[in-house]
Image 1 (cartoon, rainbow, N blue to C red):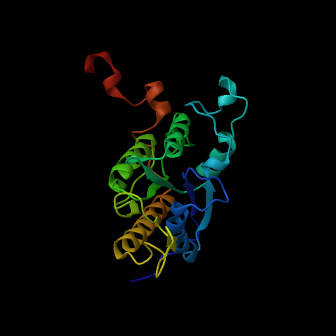
Image 2 (cartoon, rainbow, N blue to C red):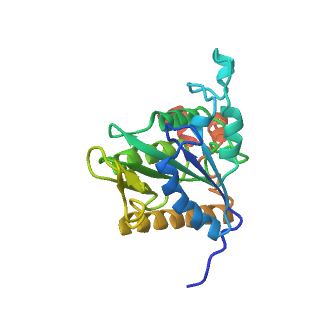
Image 3 (cartoon, rainbow, N blue to C red):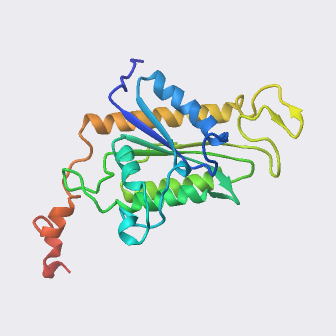
Length: 244
């Protein structure tokens, strides 16, 4: 099988842990597995921990225009929109993605009315995926909400675009822990999970393959999905009253 060249791609991981740096994030440890694959493939990779920034709540591009004293979202958005691939990482709390992950989705949504140079919505041609960690069930549930939200605003989702790890129900060690409750582990928890490692690898390469295909074809054709042409009524016959 011929090797693929992914070196023209950019990827950004947004870790939605509730823990500020430099506190250890178990989600970051699983993100690292995917990142190492990207880096091996010479992808330009960036990672940010959203809770480290002053991010206002709201669904407008800049919340300082809506009563907030500070909002670092406009700066962060420049990093996110420059990437071909967005991977959202989140822990599970009460069966759901973190509140920080929900805030990220809301702020991404705030920009979704913007358009690209084809007058398509701004996230067209971008690819999305997610990484989930936790100690109770909910990986698929969290992924379902995140991936739906990303595709709704314009991101493209490849097959098997999620991966994750969960421990036993109830208190216990988290992904990557080497000790817990006075006990020392033989190896970091979760690192030997064939299921997690396989899904993380497949997810990473599926993101790369789809992003590469889109980039090589300059995204999607503008035929049939132009906001400007819809607003102008230049192509849409069914806007004519006789079609209503």
